[in-house]
Amino acid sequence: MLVLPAKPPNPGLPGSFEDGDRDRLPADFMNPGPNWLHASNKEALQKALDDEKTELQARKLLVEAEERNQRRAHIDAAAVPSKMPLERIDRYETSNRRHRYKLEKRLEELQSRWKEQGLVSSARNAEN
Image 1 (cartoon, rainbow, N blue to C red):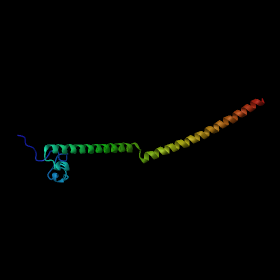
Image 2 (image 1 turned 45 degrees about the vertical axis):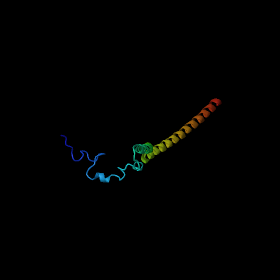
Image 3 (image 1 turned 120 degrees about the vertical axis):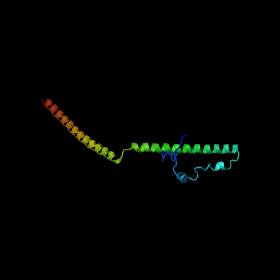
Image 4 (image 1 turned 135 degrees about the vertical axis):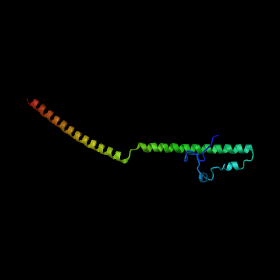
């Protein structure tokens, strides 16, 4: 003969109740809903069940859409870096920009020298 324990072996799991837990359930947990109260025969009960099923399916779609929106919002939020990495990137970009401007200035100076030297050397060649 199998003897079941008085309390569930894993208290706290969904579906397991400890002493007094049933009192903490919402009042409408076991309430069949307003559509079922007037069901006196089988057809009326079937219609009430169908109405309840339709309502629950509509609620399910709303909950699924909300969960999708929350997942997308979470993914979008995770895609944006926090403030510290953005500041670091900005510093690197500023440093790179300054370095590029210095190199461009140096290149322009060298090019102008080469042009001057080219003009001077061509003028010397023309004199000779």
